[in-house]
Image 1: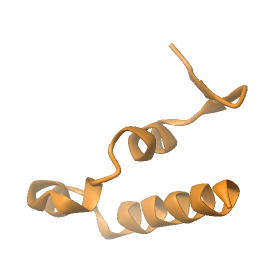
Image 2: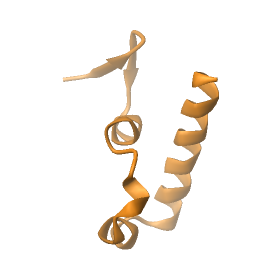
Image 3: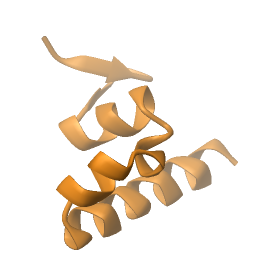
Image 4: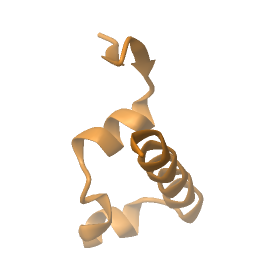
Amino acid sequence: MAVHRDDVEVDWLHRQVLTSRNIYSSRFTDFMVSVSTRARISEVVREMERARA
């Protein structure tokens, strides 16, 4: 089932950011998530914060 926010379908990564703002606080997550994925997550968070402003 697609998740929508403001009538726009949210992709998997955006859903993860929306549902888990503390993704960096887990040592297991830090170990499992690659550097490139963490960089992309940071980009998504920045985009969402800019959109909110």
